[in-house]
Length: 266
Image 1 (cartoon, rainbow, N blue to C red):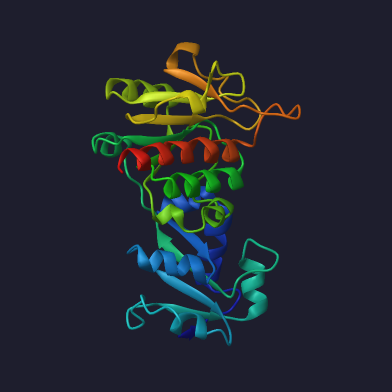
Image 2: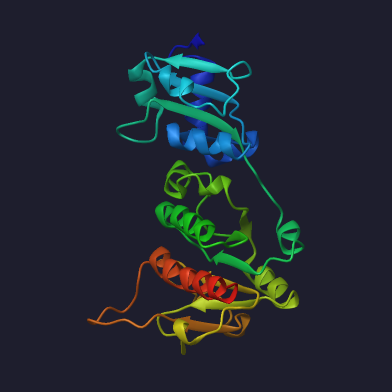
């Protein structure tokens, strides 16, 4: 373990990775924060490049048996320095840099997926991370974010994914019409979640290849051509509520997909 100062090159690079998406892309590296995300990275074979811990916090490393301590580069920071670098007001005692895992859309579609999630111009980092987490938990084969969506390696997205970003392929910055066209050509039905959709989600059979498409938090799916989706589906609501948060809506329908398929396997 090596102590590093606030003005060191390592700390400057760490700060840039947390704040600048262009630098993350340039270095093909992003930052995870906290012991639970560090453990998820280790469990999924995404070995950290560098680990930064607050002074007197060496226990966070010894508690993660999946990491090979002999190969790790561990840097110790003063607590105040770590707080000045981290992206939260009350930072965790450990940060780590990890290589991006960028799969191409062609690789994903050629793997014959039967359940995809497509986010169209998702702008809120919390929603993007929750979409990734929900898709992984419900058994989707991959998540695709269109051009105009938030950077999936934004620290807020990574935190909101709760480690699921390591558990499911996530494709970013893809042209939405091209994705929908490829899905159609591959026999994957594209179902857009829309509060004004003509068919209730619970009236559908989800035992076929499909992609659930969720739209921008404000504009929904209005930026897509009307005939680009197989169908638009809705969630019945009461008490005068017009719509759900995009990530909440995805959760409702994703678990119906999971429920039907689990029942079909019995």
